[in-house]
Length: 335
Image (cartoon, rainbow, N blue to C red; front, side):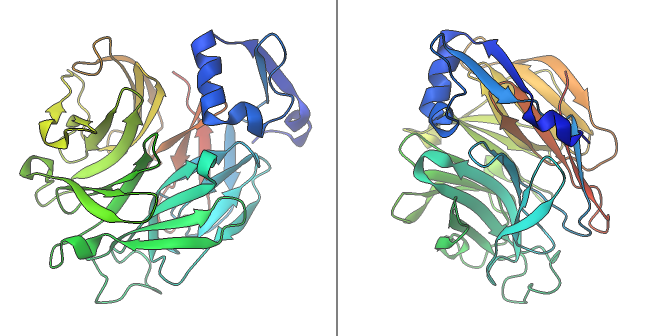
């Protein structure tokens, strides 16, 4: 845990032009006044290496860093609510609703003032789980990113009634369309800005069989999705304009247990594998037709689930531990 005196320190560095342009596109420069000087240097508060949060039984699955408010937002399998975590380890409730049985993946769409959460029910929340929703629920909850009010709740499982469902992770494209993976059905859903839901892609190759299928998902600025399948570690490339033309990304890295993804640069993808207790750094020089491993970060037996960007260079991994744990941790990845 970082000492509070370090929170007022800043680090200043010059970044390549394409990275500064990406920061502007993400709205980071506008959200953090004074962090970009006339020479294009960007400064951020010094980030702690580890944050231990004394909250029992939260079992967070998803995490996003909110640059505007300098806090992490975390989901909860066991309670459903969304929480906010500061660098000093304080945890406060950010959002809740009775329909949030288990919140899984999160996506902070800051340019549209939205926090998106995948909602499921695998029985982990014994208070809110019901026979009607158990293993049948897949939904997308959308919140106001400033005040946590629920603005929209979209039922995804109703698109394929009678099947098992587990809405897992979310990404958003440049037009604001959200894409949600289903780990229990071989489906990627699409939800547009008006809340209209559709099946974007459904294919037997996306099935996890009796195990966990599709999991982490990210949007690549060249116009496709990168999607990981947990049970066998397959990484798929899915064109936005032709989802049926999806292909496998060739890699010699074992990615079994793949969970959360982070596209740190267009050529670099970070993949959290919970079963392998490792974050893999993959790179591609051919637009993700193939990839190679360029680094690893060992987490230890902490049940890591996913990873989020902080600033332009830091990445933080979520350590839920077990559902009965009295705390969880957010740890900076070091390769």
